[in-house]
Length: 329
Image 1 (cartoon, helix red, strand yellow):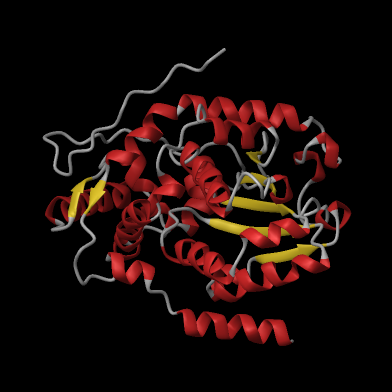
Image 2 (image 1 turned 90 degrees about the horizontal axis):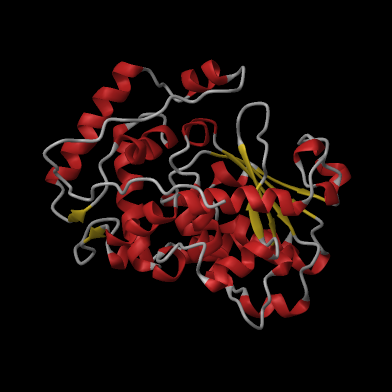
């Protein structure tokens, strides 16, 4: 049964009436500690929403942008209610959507390519969350057919997942755990990965992702793929890099994450198909709201740090240097 679609958000940067409706996270016993960590309370939420909305209304380059509470809290919660941090990520998020349309435009579960990647189990969110309420995603990267797909398709799938859960209050506050399974990686996959591609991905992850990424796990990493892993790590900032861990197999991974959360095929309770079904329903429910994101606009032809030139001109020299050092070690 197809879930009933939600109403569409307003994209006026200065509407007559703001949408203040939002949810407080519910569920885990640790939620009070989580809210304390991100410095959230009702008075701070009200104050920061007002400040961020005023900033958007006066922003000389933003033309259209959602201003509802559910949307803006993504950025405030991801940056522990720092107005400066939230506004910077929002600028870069809007810029990234325009600079990388192949990643962010038409995030539609009805799209044949996205539907296929979902059906084969390339990427999906697990049905249950961690005890702290973190959403867990599982990506079997080797299932990406290099004859048909590129890294852009992988990025688009990850954008679909992030946007499908972006208004979930628990996801915003508790964050996410990402698992990458590389067991099916083949030599042909190396042809669609390059240092330039890894740099672009890391630049976005470092600067423009409005979510709390708690940990990143890579499992079943073949020796031949270590250059990809080390290359990406070399481009990521230190904070994110320190949250990455590699495991030989799911037995080792089970020391870090409850195996019952995983699909039955990897020692969990429910089959992959059930996890995919729930993920697809989430994408269906938020489909129309995700498509309206394509209408947000920001002018990038200026000299600000999030301009077209600045977003594309990353500090490649320093990042490549880090990669080469990792490679030599």
